[in-house]
Image (cartoon, rainbow, N blue to C red; front, side, top):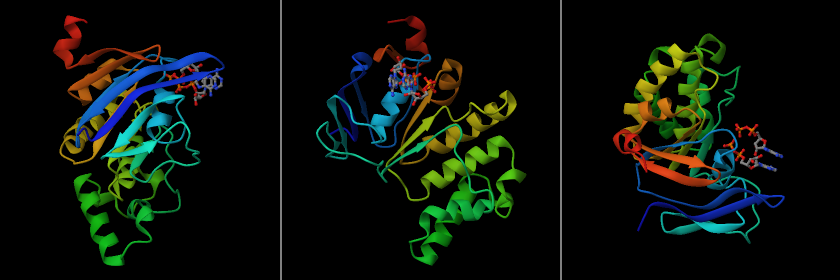
Length: 227
Ligand code: ADP
Ligand code: ADP
């Protein structure tokens, strides 16, 4: 049984197709990039994957459960699936540690404390724990955002152009740090971008989306050889 399975997803807006019979199977802990130019259907796909939008056709399965179907009414995303945007906002008046702890407020105090410590350590943020977001670089802020999203241990993490607001140096530094970090985690991660180079730097597997369909999928070598 595949862990996270998207089966023949289609979505149109005013009879114009945004996503057409899109399928993808991901194993637990898998880390993949989806690359497509503007208008290729990335945002539509992510919204469906996050449970923020209902597909016209197709099914989404997570861990043996169908998590969404076209007939089901839907108002919010799932806890199991976290979506991070480029403009993800940290709480400006909370420190790094407080931001990461926020999703854990209803958990046992001791658990929250140890979970925050673990994330600060994993993300190399121990020295920044008492800083406020404005005292961090853009790349560090994005790291805190991703650590916060992982606080409640979601099963799937969706990254929507998470580097768009960073300069090139910050971006490359973050990519090299995040690559190893996210690969080592149990969480299934999908990185969505318009930038093929970023995708190839971050993940081994890359899927190319064009006009709502997969046109290629593979590692860098397979992509260079063409379809
Ligand atoms: P991106 O490429 O980052 O998705 P866009 O400018 O294409 O940015 O889209 C921004 C938002 O507007 C998205 O949520 C998208 O679904 C929505 N959108 C895109 N095209 C249209 C459209 N023709 N009519 C209404 N909303 C649209
Ligand atoms: P991307 O994120 O790759 O830019 P989108 O998923 O935003 O692609 O858009 C795919 C196609 O669907 C585009 O043609 C876009 O204009 C259209 N689209 C997306 N969202 C909407 C919407 N809410 N209303 C109308 N058209 C939309």
